[in-house]
Image 1: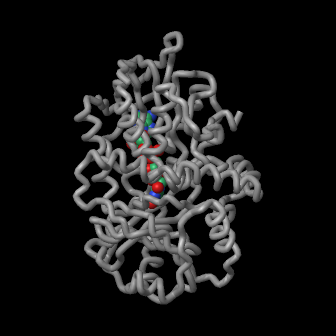
Image 2 (image 1 turned 135 degrees about the vertical axis):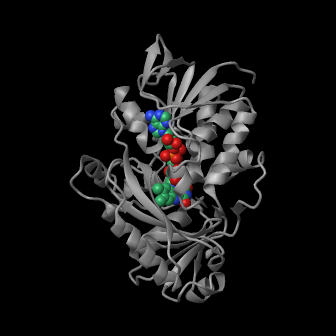
Image 3 (image 1 turned 90 degrees about the vertical axis):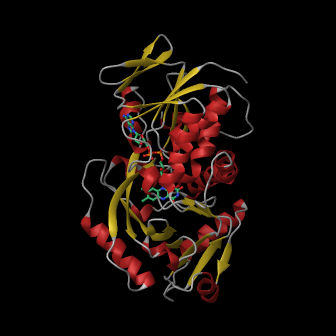
Length: 391
Ligand SMILES: Cc1cc2nc3c(=O)[nH]c(=O)nc-3n(C[C@H](O)[C@H](O)[C@H](O)COP(=O)(O)OP(=O)(O)OC[C@H]3O[C@@H](n4cnc5c(N)ncnc54)[C@H](O)[C@@H]3O)c2cc1C
């Protein structure tokens, strides 16, 4: 399709850039706005790098403080029926996530930045109730998983200390050796295809009749369509559009142990301690914790220390760590993203709220939005991702 429609995208994380590339494939003229350079320390830079077509399926209600309104909505979603709704609708897009990635990755020189060695989950609690539930739900959804014995875990990852009682291996999982480099390569592809980038903060969205206008401090840019893809920061703009979308952030951390990536072949997630380690170009990236502390509070030193202690519990002696990083997972109370048009403005589209799986779900979400903007038919059920569910 040849189209000259102009689309503006706010946010140059994996969601914004994926949207841009799929829109370009359909012939749209695309401009991305971001207040930072692409690949700067947003969530799409510092994540654990899993391309995880499996995902955490059960809502982890025990993480959540009970007092805030977000948590009240979240707890309402913790019934078995609602959890299955989340699991089924996450599975619908996760199942398409890797093929959608490949459509974009096939166009760049990956230089060994993606490893296809699976992802390993381990645990050391003997109470397997929630593990059994997750395994059962994944089986029902047809997810490829292999329950592994301690011996099999040792064979896969001999440097992990024998602290585990069991685990699950997802052989189709992949991992990024450097999410930042991949993001920048995709961004350069966008520029090469004629995309325009403006490094500028977006303050507001206004309208000229039905055409959206992106407002910065001193300038206005008019488009035919716009996509809001600002991760955890999207709520500032959707609130201005008078839509009450209950987006919050689950804060997560990482540290690196430089030159120690040879200790692991693939990401290993220690499930009941809530952290994981991925072998990357920067070394071992230890990632984890879920903290409800908003977008403005500083990094917690005790959480960083906890990550370091956990890494040593899993792997033994490690050198001094580097790079303490805090990032923001954009999360909605029902653990489903918002992918689709705004309630009130048909030319404004939303693409945010992908929580722990936003790195995996960038290209498939961008592909879905590009299809919506091109007014194509789909056989996917997209209603569960609509912002209307919060009206
Ligand atoms: C510790 C941690 C580990 C994770 N591990 C994984 C994993 O292994 N696998 C996985 O699939 N997912 C993982 N995730 C989740 C994933 O990283 C995020 O869901 C995803 O990166 C979100 O992408 P995004 O593009 O929506 O947002 P972001 O990456 O946050 O990008 C948003 C962009 O919008 C820009 N922006 C915001 N407001 C404005 C404004 N007003 N004007 C202009 N620009 C603006 C920001 O500068 C930023 O560049 C992890 C997240 C964390 C925190």
